[in-house]
Structure formats: C-alpha cells, structure tokens
Length: 80
Ligand SMILES: [Zn+2]
Image (cartoon, rainbow, N blue to C red):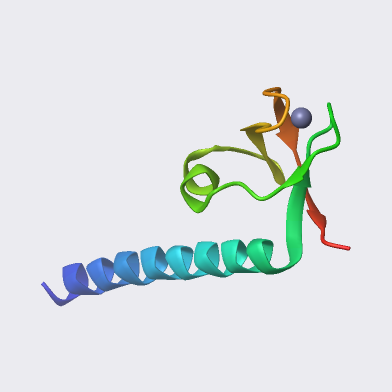
C-alpha cells in the first residue's frame, strides 16, 4: 500500500511540475515574446486559451493570424 501511495504522489508531483512549468512558460511569453505572422508580418499575442489549446510544434505553434487569417506555424520572437 505504501508503494502505491508513493506512485500516486509521484504522479501528482509530476503533474504539478508540468503545470507550473507551463504557467512559467506562458508568463514569460506574455512578458517578453510575441508571434509574427510570416504571411503579413502582423505582430500579436494570442489569448491565453488559444495558447493552451493550439497545436504545439517544436518551439512554436500552429496558429491562425488575426490579421490575414492564414493558418501558419509561428515561432515566438523576443519583443523589441
Ligand atoms: Zn497574417
């Protein structure tokens, strides 16, 4: 029984770490980064819900540009 409890807490710990990591990543993005549409050059920050539920691809995301409507792979860029 002690063994099972240990596994449960390990799982909860990993989940919590993943949530904290994601929260930090998003906080960093909103403070320091933005996406630039490769099609029209529009700079924007997507709403948090869209960030969470959009498709992750390598470093960036598959997002639809609010300016021209193009669905493209976009990588976060540093705010200047
Ligand atoms: Zn665009």
